[in-house]
Image (cartoon, rainbow, N blue to C red; front, side):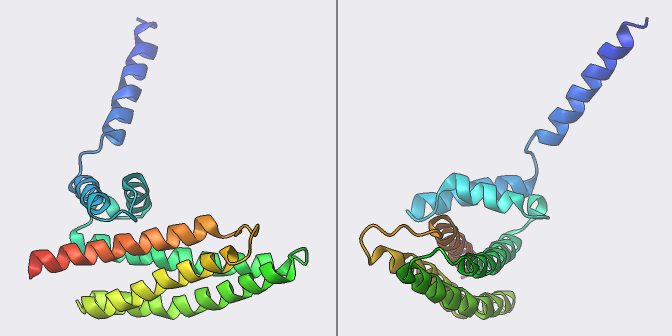
Length: 187
């Protein structure tokens, strides 16, 4: 009888893990189907990036379409705020060549300006003023591109912000796709 207990506990543990890990919620399937559509319709959106980003957010498993929009914009805000902080930290390092330092300063300004834009985008999104939210999010996409392009203007310079700029751009593309989906369905 003693040998059966560990085996029973093992089976119970495996069942619990399977139940926890099996994606079966409506939010999960909404994220998967939405990201599949977004990545098919927009070359700027990678399916895995979209699903991973949205699924990582609290409450995403039971999110509605409107909830996905809120999550996407919130992710942009976190990303923009964190990137701004990261740039400030990079600028504390004196090792940068003057050109790179200037690029970082430009990026700091761009990301600083993006913070009120993302807040305005959320406000517009929540009041279903999608065109206004679209303008704000598009300006954030432009900021990430402008930041990255600044480094590319000089041969041999590598941006220390490439991944962050790419993430900001892609998160913004996801938010725009969510808004387009909501508008299409309610229009």
